[in-house]
Length: 128
Image 1 (cartoon, rainbow, N blue to C red):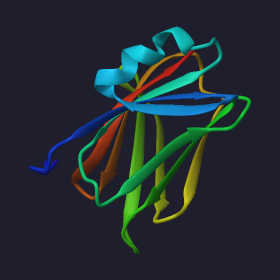
Image 2 (image 1 turned 180 degrees about the horizontal axis):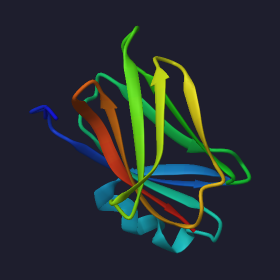
Image 3 (image 1 turned 180 degrees about the vertical axis):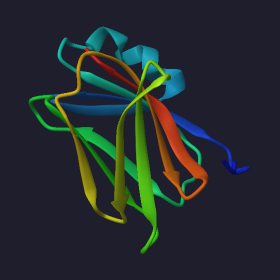
């Protein structure tokens, strides 16, 4: 896998039925007391700002959506791992398409988004 020399940005996003909040990771502790049960927390490491990755959920927290605003004609691959070891979901989308992960079980997940051999984003997802 090729790595870009661009600086990484880390965001922490809290997705709940009431809405979402995203903060740079240095400010994520400020939301810790606001995290309700039945929520999905996404921590992102943005490696390439040329591709905008969207990970979001529906209001009932039953579905996780994955889409990309990137380059026309490119394929984007989402790899979702349980505890960084076990590949549980692999989805391929093109620019502005959406893939769905239905009813993610509670637990810790690691994800990577690739285009070709380039990793463009990675992070963690916590389903509580």
